[in-house]
Amino acid sequence: MNKRKIINDPVYGFTTIPDELIYDLIQHPYFQRLRRIRQLGLTDYVYPGATHSRFQHALGALHLMTIAIDSLRSKGVEITEKEAQGAMIAILLHDIGHSPYSHALEKKIIPLKHETLSLMFMKELNDEFDGKLSEAIKIFSNKHPKRFLSQLVSSQLDVDRMDYLNRDSFFTGVAEGVIGYERIIKMLSVVDNQIVVEEKGIYSIEKFLQSRRIMYWQVYLHKTVLAAEKMLIHWFGLLLQDPMRDKALPNLKKILSNDPKIKERKKLLKLYANIDDTDIISALKFSLNSRNSNIQVLANGLLNRNLFKCQLSDHSFSKSFIRNCKKKSEYPDLVFIGRESNEGYTIDANEIMILLKDSNKSLVSLSKTSQFNIKSGLEIKHYIIYY
Image 1 (cartoon, rainbow, N blue to C red):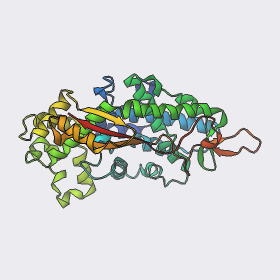
Image 2 (cartoon, rainbow, N blue to C red):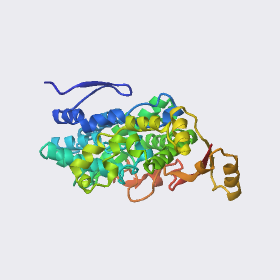
Image 3 (cartoon, one colour):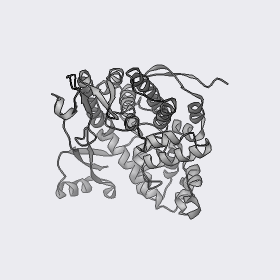
Image 4 (cartoon, helix red, strand yellow):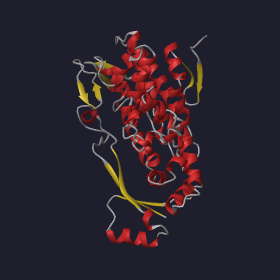
Protein backbone atom coordinates (compact mmCIF):
# COMPACT_ATOMS: atom_id res chain seq x y z
CA MET A 1 0.00 0.00 0.00
CA ASN A 2 1.32 3.44 -0.97
CA LYS A 3 1.37 5.54 2.19
CA ARG A 4 2.88 8.68 0.65
CA LYS A 5 -0.52 10.28 0.24
CA ILE A 6 -1.19 13.69 -1.27
CA ILE A 7 -3.45 16.05 0.70
CA ASN A 8 -5.17 19.10 -0.78
CA ASP A 9 -4.81 21.69 1.97
CA PRO A 10 -6.98 24.84 1.54
CA VAL A 11 -4.13 27.04 2.82
CA TYR A 12 -1.05 25.51 1.12
CA GLY A 13 -2.44 23.53 -1.80
CA PHE A 14 -1.11 20.02 -2.39
CA THR A 15 1.00 18.62 0.45
CA THR A 16 2.50 15.16 0.94
CA ILE A 17 2.69 12.76 3.88
CA PRO A 18 6.49 12.30 4.02
CA ASP A 19 6.87 8.68 5.17
CA GLU A 20 5.08 5.49 6.24
CA LEU A 21 5.48 5.93 9.99
CA ILE A 22 3.90 9.39 9.85
CA TYR A 23 1.06 7.96 7.76
CA ASP A 24 0.47 5.26 10.40
CA LEU A 25 0.46 7.88 13.18
CA ILE A 26 -2.07 9.98 11.28
CA GLN A 27 -4.28 6.90 10.89
CA HIS A 28 -4.12 6.13 14.62
CA PRO A 29 -7.40 6.74 16.55
CA TYR A 30 -5.59 9.04 18.98
CA PHE A 31 -4.70 11.38 16.12
CA GLN A 32 -7.99 10.97 14.24
CA ARG A 33 -9.71 12.31 17.37
CA LEU A 34 -8.33 15.74 16.47
CA ARG A 35 -10.83 15.86 13.59
CA ARG A 36 -13.50 16.25 16.29
CA ILE A 37 -11.82 19.08 18.18
CA ARG A 38 -12.14 22.54 16.72
CA GLN A 39 -9.01 24.62 16.47
CA LEU A 40 -10.72 27.80 17.65
CA GLY A 41 -13.39 26.47 20.00
CA LEU A 42 -16.36 28.86 20.02
CA THR A 43 -14.84 31.48 17.70
CA ASP A 44 -17.32 30.57 14.96
CA TYR A 45 -19.96 32.47 16.98
CA VAL A 46 -18.18 35.61 15.72
CA TYR A 47 -16.44 34.31 12.57
CA PRO A 48 -18.74 31.63 11.05
CA GLY A 49 -15.96 30.18 8.89
CA ALA A 50 -13.80 29.29 11.89
CA THR A 51 -14.85 25.65 12.11
CA HIS A 52 -11.49 24.09 11.16
CA SER A 53 -10.04 21.38 13.37
CA ARG A 54 -6.87 20.60 15.29
CA PHE A 55 -6.38 17.79 12.74
CA GLN A 56 -6.03 20.31 9.90
CA HIS A 57 -3.66 22.49 11.91
CA ALA A 58 -1.41 19.53 12.78
CA LEU A 59 -1.13 18.53 9.11
CA GLY A 60 -0.39 22.14 8.15
CA ALA A 61 2.35 22.44 10.78
CA LEU A 62 3.81 19.15 9.51
CA HIS A 63 3.95 20.61 5.99
CA LEU A 64 5.79 23.72 7.21
CA MET A 65 8.25 21.55 9.14
CA THR A 66 9.14 19.64 5.96
CA ILE A 67 9.79 22.96 4.17
CA ALA A 68 11.91 24.24 7.08
CA ILE A 69 14.03 21.09 7.18
CA ASP A 70 14.63 21.18 3.41
CA SER A 71 15.55 24.87 3.59
CA LEU A 72 18.03 24.40 6.46
CA ARG A 73 19.63 21.43 4.72
CA SER A 74 20.10 23.53 1.58
CA LYS A 75 22.18 25.93 3.72
CA GLY A 76 24.45 23.14 4.91
CA VAL A 77 22.77 22.46 8.26
CA GLU A 78 23.25 18.78 9.09
CA ILE A 79 19.94 17.07 9.85
CA THR A 80 19.90 13.27 9.62
CA GLU A 81 16.89 11.34 8.32
CA LYS A 82 16.19 10.14 11.87
CA GLU A 83 16.28 13.71 13.21
CA ALA A 84 14.09 15.01 10.37
CA GLN A 85 11.51 12.31 11.02
CA GLY A 86 11.65 13.05 14.75
CA ALA A 87 11.01 16.77 14.19
CA MET A 88 8.12 16.03 11.84
CA ILE A 89 6.51 13.61 14.31
CA ALA A 90 7.00 16.07 17.19
CA ILE A 91 5.14 18.83 15.36
CA LEU A 92 2.49 16.44 14.04
CA LEU A 93 1.62 15.31 17.57
CA HIS A 94 2.23 18.58 19.44
CA ASP A 95 -1.51 19.20 19.98
CA ILE A 96 -2.68 15.60 20.42
CA GLY A 97 -3.36 16.22 24.13
CA HIS A 98 -5.91 18.99 23.63
CA SER A 99 -9.21 18.74 25.48
CA PRO A 100 -12.61 19.34 23.87
CA TYR A 101 -13.03 22.99 22.86
CA SER A 102 -9.26 23.36 23.06
CA HIS A 103 -8.05 26.00 25.54
CA ALA A 104 -11.50 26.76 27.04
CA LEU A 105 -11.73 23.43 28.90
CA GLU A 106 -7.99 22.84 29.37
CA LYS A 107 -7.25 21.29 32.79
CA LYS A 108 -11.00 21.04 33.53
CA ILE A 109 -11.30 17.30 32.73
CA ILE A 110 -7.80 16.21 33.72
CA PRO A 111 -5.77 18.76 35.75
CA LEU A 112 -2.88 18.74 33.28
CA LYS A 113 -1.79 21.12 30.53
CA HIS A 114 -2.31 19.90 26.98
CA GLU A 115 1.48 19.84 26.44
CA THR A 116 1.83 17.35 29.31
CA LEU A 117 -0.94 15.18 27.87
CA SER A 118 0.61 15.39 24.40
CA LEU A 119 3.87 14.05 25.82
CA MET A 120 1.98 11.24 27.57
CA PHE A 121 0.31 10.31 24.26
CA MET A 122 3.71 10.34 22.51
CA LYS A 123 5.17 7.98 25.10
CA GLU A 124 2.18 5.67 24.77
CA LEU A 125 2.50 5.67 20.98
CA ASN A 126 6.24 5.12 21.33
CA ASP A 127 5.52 1.88 23.21
CA GLU A 128 3.00 0.88 20.55
CA PHE A 129 5.40 1.64 17.67
CA ASP A 130 8.42 -0.14 19.21
CA GLY A 131 10.41 2.94 20.21
CA LYS A 132 10.21 4.72 16.85
CA LEU A 133 9.07 7.97 18.48
CA SER A 134 12.05 8.29 20.85
CA GLU A 135 13.71 10.98 18.72
CA ALA A 136 10.45 12.94 18.50
CA ILE A 137 10.00 12.79 22.28
CA LYS A 138 13.50 14.23 22.84
CA ILE A 139 12.76 17.06 20.42
CA PHE A 140 9.31 17.79 21.87
CA SER A 141 10.71 17.73 25.44
CA ASN A 142 13.57 20.08 24.52
CA LYS A 143 16.08 17.38 25.47
CA HIS A 144 17.60 16.81 22.04
CA PRO A 145 21.27 17.82 21.60
CA LYS A 146 20.31 19.78 18.47
CA ARG A 147 18.34 22.51 20.23
CA PHE A 148 17.29 24.17 16.99
CA LEU A 149 15.02 21.22 16.18
CA SER A 150 13.09 21.83 19.41
CA GLN A 151 12.90 25.55 18.56
CA LEU A 152 11.18 24.71 15.26
CA VAL A 153 8.48 22.94 17.30
CA SER A 154 8.14 25.45 20.15
CA SER A 155 9.66 28.92 20.41
CA GLN A 156 8.73 32.53 19.69
CA LEU A 157 9.18 31.74 15.99
CA ASP A 158 8.04 28.16 15.38
CA VAL A 159 6.13 26.38 12.63
CA ASP A 160 3.19 25.86 15.02
CA ARG A 161 2.60 29.62 15.20
CA MET A 162 3.27 30.10 11.50
CA ASP A 163 0.55 27.62 10.62
CA TYR A 164 -2.10 28.71 13.08
CA LEU A 165 -1.74 32.40 12.17
CA ASN A 166 -2.14 31.65 8.46
CA ARG A 167 -4.84 29.02 8.95
CA ASP A 168 -6.89 30.96 11.49
CA SER A 169 -6.63 34.07 9.32
CA PHE A 170 -7.82 32.09 6.29
CA PHE A 171 -10.86 30.57 8.01
CA THR A 172 -11.90 33.68 9.97
CA GLY A 173 -11.35 36.01 7.04
CA VAL A 174 -9.22 38.33 9.19
CA ALA A 175 -6.62 39.34 6.61
CA GLU A 176 -4.35 41.03 9.16
CA GLY A 177 -3.26 37.60 10.42
CA VAL A 178 -1.69 36.51 7.13
CA ILE A 179 2.09 36.13 7.36
CA GLY A 180 4.78 35.50 4.76
CA TYR A 181 5.59 32.03 6.07
CA GLU A 182 7.61 31.03 2.98
CA ARG A 183 9.92 34.02 3.25
CA ILE A 184 10.30 33.58 7.03
CA ILE A 185 11.28 29.92 6.61
CA LYS A 186 13.73 30.77 3.80
CA MET A 187 15.35 33.36 6.10
CA LEU A 188 16.00 30.83 8.89
CA SER A 189 19.46 29.45 9.57
CA VAL A 190 21.34 27.78 12.43
CA VAL A 191 24.22 29.34 14.38
CA ASP A 192 25.57 28.01 17.68
CA ASN A 193 22.91 25.28 17.68
CA GLN A 194 20.02 27.75 17.64
CA ILE A 195 17.58 29.04 15.05
CA VAL A 196 18.48 32.51 13.79
CA VAL A 197 16.96 34.83 11.19
CA GLU A 198 19.07 36.39 8.45
CA GLU A 199 19.14 40.19 8.72
CA LYS A 200 17.18 40.70 5.51
CA GLY A 201 14.26 38.84 7.11
CA ILE A 202 13.71 41.36 9.93
CA TYR A 203 10.69 43.03 8.32
CA SER A 204 8.98 39.66 7.82
CA ILE A 205 9.52 38.86 11.52
CA GLU A 206 8.10 42.24 12.54
CA LYS A 207 5.02 41.55 10.42
CA PHE A 208 4.74 38.10 12.01
CA LEU A 209 4.73 39.57 15.54
CA GLN A 210 2.31 42.32 14.57
CA SER A 211 -0.05 39.81 12.95
CA ARG A 212 0.01 37.62 16.05
CA ARG A 213 -0.86 40.55 18.32
CA ILE A 214 -3.76 41.60 16.07
CA MET A 215 -5.11 38.04 15.88
CA TYR A 216 -5.13 37.74 19.67
CA TRP A 217 -7.25 40.81 20.32
CA GLN A 218 -9.35 40.63 17.15
CA VAL A 219 -9.99 36.85 17.12
CA TYR A 220 -8.72 34.72 20.03
CA LEU A 221 -9.71 37.22 22.76
CA HIS A 222 -12.59 38.93 20.94
CA LYS A 223 -15.08 40.01 23.60
CA THR A 224 -17.94 37.88 22.22
CA VAL A 225 -15.70 34.82 22.00
CA LEU A 226 -14.56 35.57 25.55
CA ALA A 227 -18.17 35.71 26.77
CA ALA A 228 -18.99 32.38 25.11
CA GLU A 229 -15.89 30.68 26.54
CA LYS A 230 -16.56 31.93 30.09
CA MET A 231 -20.16 30.70 29.77
CA LEU A 232 -18.88 27.29 28.66
CA ILE A 233 -16.35 27.09 31.51
CA HIS A 234 -18.92 28.10 34.15
CA TRP A 235 -21.55 25.72 32.74
CA PHE A 236 -19.06 22.86 32.81
CA GLY A 237 -18.06 23.66 36.39
CA LEU A 238 -21.70 23.67 37.52
CA LEU A 239 -22.42 20.46 35.64
CA LEU A 240 -19.51 18.66 37.34
CA GLN A 241 -21.20 19.36 40.70
CA ASP A 242 -24.68 18.41 39.49
CA PRO A 243 -26.37 15.07 40.43
CA MET A 244 -27.07 14.47 36.71
CA ARG A 245 -23.39 14.82 35.76
CA ASP A 246 -22.79 11.19 34.84
CA LYS A 247 -25.89 11.04 32.64
CA ALA A 248 -24.94 14.26 30.87
CA LEU A 249 -21.30 13.21 30.43
CA PRO A 250 -21.30 9.40 30.12
CA ASN A 251 -17.89 9.24 28.41
CA LEU A 252 -16.33 11.21 31.27
CA LYS A 253 -17.85 9.12 34.05
CA LYS A 254 -14.81 6.92 34.68
CA ILE A 255 -12.26 9.74 34.37
CA LEU A 256 -14.19 11.86 36.86
CA SER A 257 -14.69 8.96 39.30
CA ASN A 258 -11.25 9.34 40.99
CA ASP A 259 -10.78 5.59 40.67
CA PRO A 260 -7.04 4.97 41.34
CA LYS A 261 -7.00 2.30 38.61
CA ILE A 262 -7.73 4.99 36.03
CA LYS A 263 -4.52 6.88 36.85
CA GLU A 264 -2.43 4.27 35.03
CA ARG A 265 -1.29 6.00 31.81
CA LYS A 266 -2.63 3.53 29.27
CA LYS A 267 -6.12 3.41 30.80
CA LEU A 268 -6.28 7.16 31.37
CA LEU A 269 -5.30 8.03 27.79
CA LYS A 270 -7.68 5.47 26.31
CA LEU A 271 -10.57 7.07 28.20
CA TYR A 272 -9.40 10.61 27.44
CA ALA A 273 -9.04 9.83 23.73
CA ASN A 274 -12.73 8.94 23.64
CA ILE A 275 -13.72 12.51 24.59
CA ASP A 276 -14.14 15.28 22.04
CA ASP A 277 -16.34 18.27 21.15
CA THR A 278 -19.34 16.05 20.42
CA ASP A 279 -19.51 14.95 24.08
CA ILE A 280 -19.75 18.58 25.18
CA ILE A 281 -22.46 19.36 22.62
CA SER A 282 -24.48 16.33 23.78
CA ALA A 283 -24.09 17.44 27.41
CA LEU A 284 -25.28 20.95 26.51
CA LYS A 285 -28.41 19.47 24.93
CA PHE A 286 -28.98 17.29 28.00
CA SER A 287 -28.60 20.38 30.20
CA LEU A 288 -31.59 22.11 28.60
CA ASN A 289 -33.78 20.03 30.92
CA SER A 290 -31.67 20.58 34.03
CA ARG A 291 -33.40 21.46 37.29
CA ASN A 292 -30.60 23.93 37.91
CA SER A 293 -31.73 27.18 36.25
CA ASN A 294 -28.15 28.45 35.90
CA ILE A 295 -27.07 25.29 34.05
CA GLN A 296 -30.15 25.57 31.87
CA VAL A 297 -29.69 29.22 30.92
CA LEU A 298 -26.00 28.75 30.12
CA ALA A 299 -26.68 25.67 27.98
CA ASN A 300 -29.48 27.42 26.11
CA GLY A 301 -27.29 30.46 25.55
CA LEU A 302 -24.44 28.38 24.13
CA LEU A 303 -26.60 26.18 21.91
CA ASN A 304 -28.68 29.03 20.50
CA ARG A 305 -26.10 31.83 20.60
CA ASN A 306 -27.96 33.81 23.21
CA LEU A 307 -24.70 35.06 24.64
CA PHE A 308 -24.01 37.22 27.65
CA LYS A 309 -22.79 40.80 27.31
CA CYS A 310 -19.09 41.45 27.76
CA GLN A 311 -17.38 44.72 28.57
CA LEU A 312 -13.62 45.16 28.36
CA SER A 313 -11.51 47.74 30.11
CA ASP A 314 -7.84 48.59 30.54
CA HIS A 315 -8.55 48.97 34.26
CA SER A 316 -10.32 46.81 36.84
CA PHE A 317 -14.04 47.53 37.35
CA SER A 318 -15.19 49.36 40.47
CA LYS A 319 -17.24 47.58 43.13
CA SER A 320 -20.19 49.91 42.50
CA PHE A 321 -20.12 49.13 38.76
CA ILE A 322 -20.10 45.40 39.49
CA ARG A 323 -23.02 45.81 41.93
CA ASN A 324 -25.02 47.68 39.29
CA CYS A 325 -24.36 44.94 36.73
CA LYS A 326 -25.60 42.32 39.18
CA LYS A 327 -28.71 44.38 39.93
CA LYS A 328 -29.51 44.72 36.23
CA SER A 329 -28.83 41.06 35.44
CA GLU A 330 -31.60 38.47 35.38
CA TYR A 331 -29.06 36.00 36.77
CA PRO A 332 -26.88 37.82 39.34
CA ASP A 333 -25.07 34.56 40.14
CA LEU A 334 -23.86 34.48 36.55
CA VAL A 335 -21.77 37.64 36.50
CA PHE A 336 -18.18 36.77 35.62
CA ILE A 337 -15.30 39.10 36.42
CA GLY A 338 -11.66 38.57 35.54
CA ARG A 339 -8.89 39.51 33.18
CA GLU A 340 -7.21 38.18 30.06
CA SER A 341 -3.71 38.88 28.87
CA ASN A 342 -1.48 38.40 25.87
CA GLU A 343 2.29 38.60 25.63
CA GLY A 344 3.11 39.33 22.01
CA TYR A 345 6.86 39.03 22.43
CA THR A 346 9.10 38.13 25.35
CA ILE A 347 12.47 39.80 25.78
CA ASP A 348 14.44 37.10 27.59
CA ALA A 349 17.00 34.36 26.99
CA ASN A 350 14.74 32.87 24.30
CA GLU A 351 14.54 35.96 22.10
CA ILE A 352 14.51 35.72 18.31
CA MET A 353 18.13 36.14 17.20
CA ILE A 354 19.18 38.03 14.06
CA LEU A 355 22.25 37.05 12.00
CA LEU A 356 23.86 40.29 10.82
CA LYS A 357 25.48 40.67 7.41
CA ASP A 358 28.70 42.11 8.85
CA SER A 359 32.08 40.43 8.36
CA ASN A 360 31.90 38.79 11.79
CA LYS A 361 28.40 37.40 11.18
CA SER A 362 27.38 38.72 14.58
CA LEU A 363 24.24 37.62 16.40
CA VAL A 364 22.00 40.21 18.02
CA SER A 365 18.53 39.97 19.54
CA LEU A 366 15.53 41.22 17.57
CA SER A 367 14.63 43.79 20.26
CA LYS A 368 18.03 45.47 19.77
CA THR A 369 17.97 45.36 15.99
CA SER A 370 14.42 46.15 14.96
CA GLN A 371 13.32 49.71 14.23
CA PHE A 372 9.79 48.52 14.89
CA ASN A 373 8.56 49.07 18.45
CA ILE A 374 9.17 45.58 19.84
CA LYS A 375 7.36 45.46 23.18
CA SER A 376 7.83 42.99 25.96
CA GLY A 377 5.36 42.40 28.73
CA LEU A 378 1.73 41.50 29.14
CA GLU A 379 -1.14 43.39 27.56
CA ILE A 380 -3.98 43.04 30.06
CA LYS A 381 -7.72 43.52 29.57
CA HIS A 382 -10.22 43.31 32.42
CA TYR A 383 -13.67 41.90 31.65
CA ILE A 384 -17.13 41.71 33.15
CA ILE A 385 -19.66 39.33 31.61
CA TYR A 386 -23.35 39.35 32.53
CA TYR A 387 -26.81 38.55 31.17
